Length: 250
Image (cartoon, rainbow, N blue to C red; front, side, top):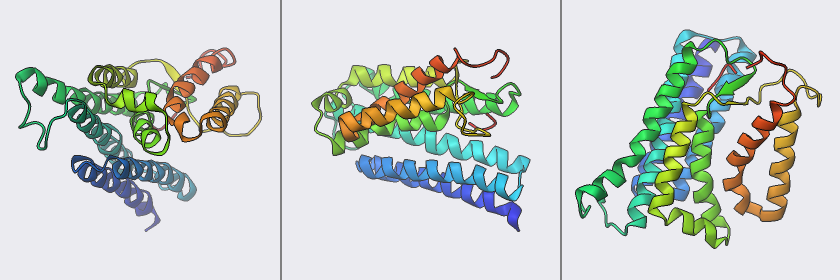
């Protein structure tokens, strides 16, 4: 029976992502964002439970990737789609009220995100080199990058965040950059570690320190900085990492 527990938790991840999409297409982007965070919690919990119960399976591995495509690829792309429609002041249903073929293409531009998320996970599942770090942006980090702007825009008073989410051009550039980062081969930190010593965990401690400082200074307005700081800390950690080390989870 215990072998089914991780897969059940993974299914909750997928369900959370799907429900997030339902809220997103109805304009409830903040609720959708919190549901994606719930999906991230289940994504962490299924791996933790698999290790705790020693309940690994090929089915679980594939199910995890399928759930991640939905929750961390498709769901954030739907949020981007809704933000793009809002930036162009399109009434619902936006795709039918698009004023031109160019507008339709702009609305459909987020399709690159779930495609790259699926590619990233497909490659990850057969890549044996990712043992101590990721190669490319993990799909949960992609989703966090998107929802951080929604959450920060809702709970903080920084007009620069609203200006970003209201800009069609910036949203498209943001989407393309995140999507390409997922299929890149840039080595990025994994948070799986066997100990809490500073040596060997330099990048992780640097990241935690930078995020804490950002939150103290900016409050919820620091949320959009988390992924840039994650990438920065990952690149800094390369200075400390022995060559040849390159997680076992996307």
